[in-house]
Every structure is written in structure tokens, then in C-alpha cells.
Image 1 (cartoon, rainbow, N blue to C red):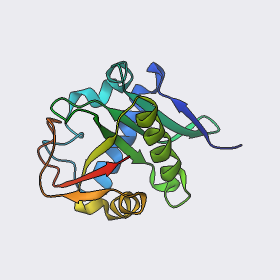
Image 2 (spheres, helix red, strand yellow):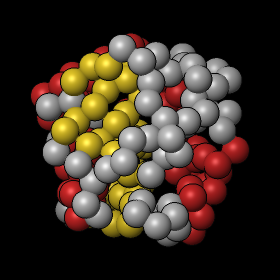
Image 3 (tube, rainbow, N blue to C red):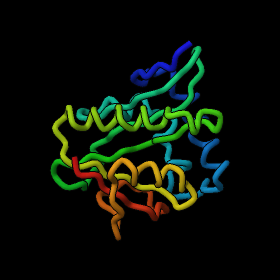
Length: 160
């Protein structure tokens, strides 16, 4: 069966939170000040009911492969949205699924009228950072907005 991209549903909360935390443990970034300890990680369907936000999942044969979304994080400059919760299962990496999810999220940002996409990450996620750079994201020297994820130390911005 083909890979399906679809919007998050309430039934996805538990599986998605599990996938995200598994990725954090895999890369040894499971620490305070990250999505790992953020209680909203368990209720992402509800989080993405926020206006001007979107969250996309990739699945194959009913199996969750990963997800990525955009969210109007508090404190970001006017016209800027954050690329958030972008994670893929280990088995799904290197197959173009992440690129599909990121592009779908950026398309959502454009559809909502945003002109910049911001993200926060970690040096340990070097493959993802390479993908961001290839997509046109530029490194920043300091964070934007108030994500609450104070442990992140890679900040990037894409001008649409």
C-alpha cells in the first residue's frame, strides 16, 4: 500500500506521543525543556485545533510513520509560524517521507498566509538539520517566540 498523508485525528494522540518520545530516547535528547517532557505532547490533536495550525501524519497500512506540523507559537514575529513536532520512526527515515511531511506543512503555512517558517532543533538531529538547510532554512543565532522548549539550541528560519 502507498504512504498516506492525512491530518491528525484524536485517535492518533497516544501513538504519536509514543513515537515522539521514542525518537527523543533514540537520540538521547530526552530531557526537560523539550517536547519529551511537554504535557501537550500527549494531546496533539487538541493542540492543533488552534486556528492557523495544521498537523500532518504519514501512515502506511494503518501504521504511523511520522508527523510534522505548523503552529502559531506565541511571541513569533507577525507572519511567522513554527514548524513543530517533526518526527519519523527509525524505519521510515531515508525514504523521502520526512520531505513529504515538511513540504505539506510548508504548503499549509503558505495557504494560511505566513511568510516565514521558524523551527527549533538539536545538533543531534543532524540529518534533519541537513534537510532543513536543503529546503532553504537559514541558521539563527538566537531563538524566536516562546515555545517553552528552552533546551533546544538550533534555531532556523525559512523565508517563503
